[in-house]
Image 1 (cartoon, rainbow, N blue to C red):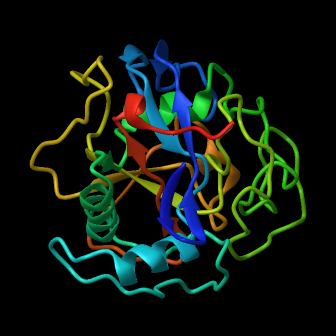
Image 2: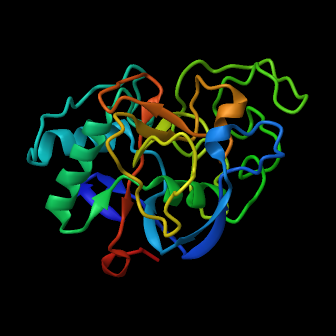
Image 3: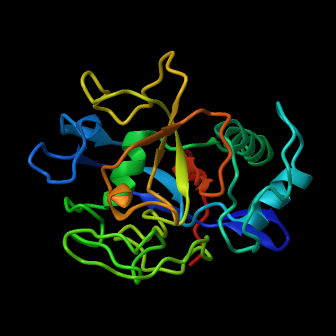
Length: 256
């Protein structure tokens, strides 16, 4: 647990090392070309934020932690609520948050690589979603009035929900599917040809950055574990937020 201020903390989960198949197989009905070829990736252990970064956590860092490269709006979100995920966050904003937190704590906080994100999301599963082959509004916050695998749920919340409102995956991570899109370090690539197999970030001169997980405004198909999205790093939308990771596992304190 990382203490930000007296009343505000960040809960982190240790993600174990492992090997997984990243992407989706070509015979998956809903897979896209950019999710292929499916390939084996080896991941080292790391820490990941148990929840999406909340508006309360964002505000504390934006106000009380010294600027590294840019100012941060303490209250950027369209949908208000201290325990709701912060949104309308650009890729640059998210990195400034990580830089401030790293400077203040002496630990290396950053955005996840795309491979780390998918590994953490799947949590050992190989199905379309970490909770199985289909999705319902009882499992995630998404545009659930649209069909996925012949199931039609006439329900659409049309806004973010408090973090932790739905069941976690097997690693104990919440909202890896839906609520708000999550920024990754990586730049966009049209497919996985020549992608790293060691879990490292894949960064080149492409102007777009990766997002994962889907959002409250996403169709069900976009919330799949393998689904990939891209935006300009300057983009700020009501359904884009982030969660962070930390490399310094051995220095972290886990309360009993």
